[in-house]
Image (tube, rainbow, N blue to C red; front, top):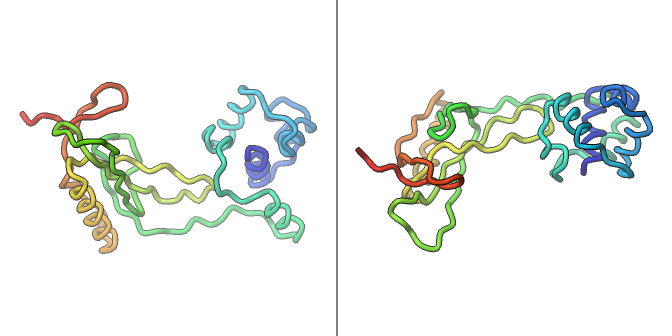
Length: 196
């Protein structure tokens, strides 16, 4: 819930309600109302929160499995300093996305998403391989990165298994090899690119 997330972000940054009120240009009472769920900020105030805390709108507004405000309060009541969780160093491997050249390239795991279709078409790929980025140490999980499309789902699973094995073998980089080249088709679709 928004009220828990804004409170958690404020406490993680060791800010008082007054500090956050100054940043948003509102009263301390407004921050109190945001945090107890009796009021919500306007869109321009949300934009300031997103920019200041370097989070997305989804991070602020969509329910997830973050620590609850009750857990934060109990930590404060025990007089323990509230600190961010230490980043766990996970083994990563570099894989360059063939679909987004500006995407994250270091991953801790790989998943296959099958494209739901009522029937197979020769010009449509059937699965996409996604990389799971390393955790950043913050409270919000990064989104998976689309790496490549596959004509056959078994090729996607073979690629996933090969990438996982390379990660397990502590290789620094894995080159995709079972994918099919694609091109955009409309706004939300792709199709297999014809070989020239």
